[in-house]
Image (cartoon, rainbow, N blue to C red; front, side, top):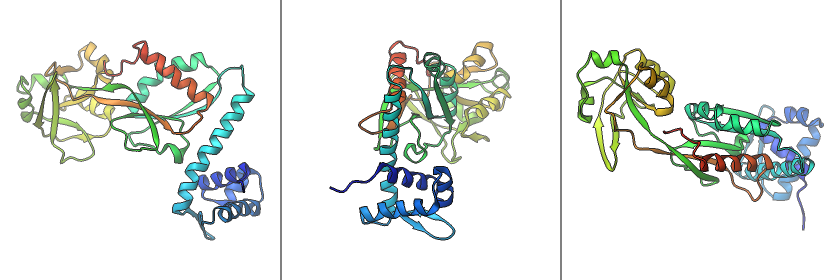
Length: 303
């Protein structure tokens, strides 16, 4: 049975990541002609065109995208296997590429990840903070933390907690506006919203098993928690914040809970990683550490 060499797959993965034959050749320290021949060899073996090549650019065909995802996993697993064997009976080490929403990532950097890196000092963490759901396959990310439901069925997803938000405002704002005694009173206030679309005007609030939807209005909306908190601190209006993000301000009194006892319905917090038979030793170590950390009740993002 014909086989595809690791060298061929590795070269193809590099070309897919750079979309430039010359740059790939430089990275691999190979002649450009060798890189081109290896890609052609793979196309001939699979009997399918994987790249569209011109003098100006290289792009992936549909078949190329499929092959890249599978090839990337195989190359990464082999590299991790080699690293694990070489570091057998030694410390967990290497680079872990992680992604998380900004507020959650900031919290994890000072808690879970700090504890993990103290236990394994030879680990290097590259943490990308983004509200977008980064493609773990295309960007070579080892592990992602996500808030909300997971739509990508190629990923392994494990829920580790939940995030809920409370309503807050500055004492100055509340002193200058009508009291908020019931959810319906929010209609008379400037509500600062976490969203991209200003036409989405309802806030859903929950108290125990009771849930209500309240139409709100406001003159400021943003997809960044820190920006919303700063606007609330300046007395612009009422907003929703994760408890972890507002804890310090609630304690020093610069923000006050509105409709205490009500909150936004919790959203699940997942960790996600690429599916595969074998996980790199460094990733398995992090997964085990997270399991232990959660079991000990240290994950208090939404507390």
